[in-house]
Picture (cartoon, rainbow, N blue to C red):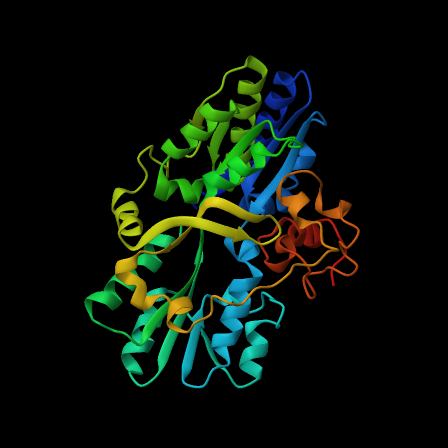
Length: 363
């Protein structure tokens, strides 16, 4: 299969791992920011193919993982309300807040439905004009344009029984927060290819220039990842600092202008709470004032909901690259995929879930 088989070629994998071993002369720590990349690294044993001096640590992972407890509790509150049809992507149904998950809300009688697209949620609103339809709008920059399109169409059609509960996050501010931590160990980054498909690479150029760390845009297959790691190591060894694109078959420097225009029309940048990390300035998206009528928090007066996170979970350290998942005392004991405490275990794309699946014992 084109763009799959050739990027899993064992001969290329062996060649690239050998080249990394030839180039590296001292220890380096590299963070992959994306949970999809983390799972590929664990699944294919990429980290075990690297020389011991190349150390991979894992970033915030995925938007499902870092969606705040406040958002999840607001979702639960709406999902059990009479007259509300609550819709979301399927991977959000089992993510627990302090009140439980959306499966529990459905078991309690809530009309909770998973959809494959926000436009499907919009159609449900058209089909049920007597019901309030809420869509849990989750994602990094990858999914934000499609969710923005649903809001724009709802406004155009004056479909005021539709609203969204926003949980959108931006990757570059998270990178800034990680690099600003005085205890950070991160010396280089692998950037998520699918995010850069939308945003391009210019925002990453600002981060690289500000902190002086190399960054390579990477894909998700073994050859993609090893090739990107090789480029990061080469830059670290030479002292070169820049943004390099190792995913050119998908990513252009300018990204997707039409998608970015859609995002910028519907959303504006705001401070955002990241589960396990805390509030990061200018790291989230919220609806602009002209679309306020479609903001579920305002519409249903949910701003008062506030939740405290677990004191046991050390997921913040995991997502900042300060420790590995299996170094957390709760990992695999009080925290498992069936009973997650923290952000990286709540989703299949989280680093802790990846370690549990590929390096721990199966449940």
